[in-house]
Length: 244
Ligand SMILES: C[S@@+](CC[C@H](N)C(=O)[O-])C[C@H]1O[C@@H](n2cnc3c(N)ncnc32)[C@H](O)[C@@H]1O
Image (tube, rainbow, N blue to C red; front, side, top):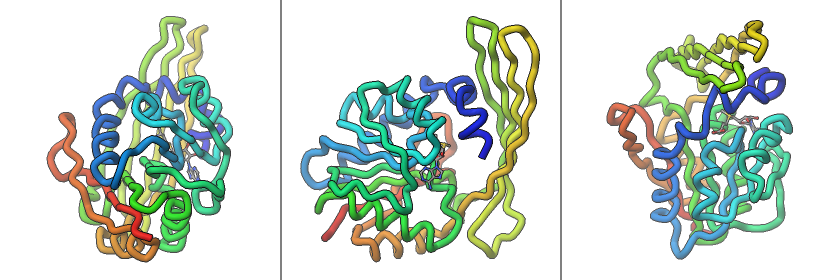
């Protein structure tokens, strides 16, 4: 995925941390609510550029994992006080537990039940009994709707980035949908570079999420995501308490 490798240095312009303040507050409150007992340590799987982490770090001691070294480099600049580890969320084994595990939109790259099961197993192995798991997929099967959107920002040095993101589901009977990106990058000298990127993303019904969480050892529920910029019901979280 070009977006997380070749284009990663542009991530803060494509997805600025300032946009994450409200949602990171929702995750902070949800993590504390789901967990039994205090939450001090938090593992984030698929941290990307660390845009949620920079807010979560005010409340928790964070360990941030991503499989793309280029994205970890972006997050390290934003979150120098956090521990960073390169790894795949399906196979990561740090051999220690945390009070909570958080997975944001990186979970969409799990496109099969087998992948999702592997990630939930990783989460369970890294979560203490009574600890919390909070997952925020972009969509569940029930909330999915074809969308397009755009964004991007400018830097005072003349650099700027804009993107168009377009998602659709060509086969409603399988566990994937497609997202295409068109990205324009303006360098400080004014020249423009354009890129396209195409991702296949995972889409699972609530019942699958809840079953796989239960099988991994979490007592899980679907939690509404109430954000001032989103219509009610367009996104939802999966929250689970580690049972054993
Ligand atoms: C949309 S970005 C995350 C952005 C992040 N939420 C932020 O705010 O900066 C998705 C991330 O998932 C990571 N990723 C995808 N598959 C992964 C896997 N199997 N294990 C770990 N990280 C993965 C990618 O490298 C990418 O950095």
